[in-house]
Length: 422
Image (cartoon, rainbow, N blue to C red):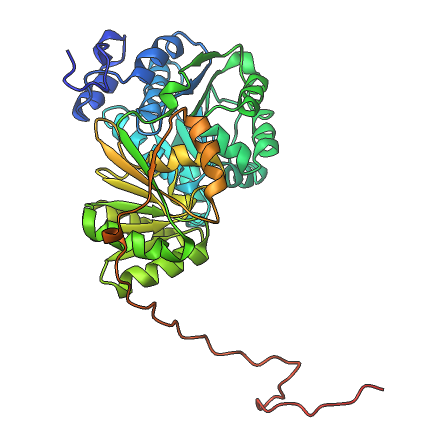
């Protein structure tokens, strides 16, 4: 019997999995399946297409990787070739692609299967050179693989398995046409296994999936989309008291790892300045942070180098950071589905977590939609006056020097004389 209530009674050994795969699963300490794994694997291993829904951190990635590896290892006649993968996994963000690749390497450790990952913001030539080596499983962001395909560096005609991870995010980011471009280059839908996984399933996602799949089976329920081990609460707070409440909460809770979500880079900069000025060690993660810096920040945060990560929604998906104790929505997300993904950064498999929400003047009207989506009425209250901390002022950032332009400067830097227009 499993000793954690987030697991089922189904064991991985209950399936006819190849020995190298079972060895990797055992090395990772996995014995019993999570609900999404127990429901999905019997279908996928019998060549059924599926649409899988479960909350983030419940084993979706391991589900489709185990199925892919089982199918590839069972096909003894095929062998890895350069530029011609047999399985394709599409991810909406580079962080998610990297996370999938990391888990794929762990699950293929004792086999001869070769994995490759492609994403933007990384060494272009290095990725091109990697494609010249044999590849069984290709993990990629949509834009980067299309780029390489148009250069004839990736052949998609031998794809046996297609996975779309976080499909709702792909639609939100406008990838529908790009995904269709890629699927038209694959073998016919009936000649491949298709899997689509996401934490949220709108009607738009379902409609999209039926176009790309062969009579798929839906696995999961709406109830499963809400992380079950995350306690949620909300505070009514004025805009000008949000910083005070945030600092007071962080001092009161002393979280081991806390992610503070905001909606804009400007807000992230402002909050980071205030936290630093008030003695709270933190870092910022947003879309304009370079890829190598992002990886360093995530690694440092995962190792506990600093306790608070201030982030935009770039951190809401694809990042698996263990033991995040708290998520604070300083700004409520404008899309309620993003709320599910944000709070999914805590309360990962077998863990507990806490989500705290600020209902402020600017974003308060988004909260009813969030509660309607998750089907839960979240406890709301005014913050205790003791939680509103005294705040040291935000330090002024030095302005960058203005660069002279050709219109108002002469060659030696002096202002050009004004000439009256005739």
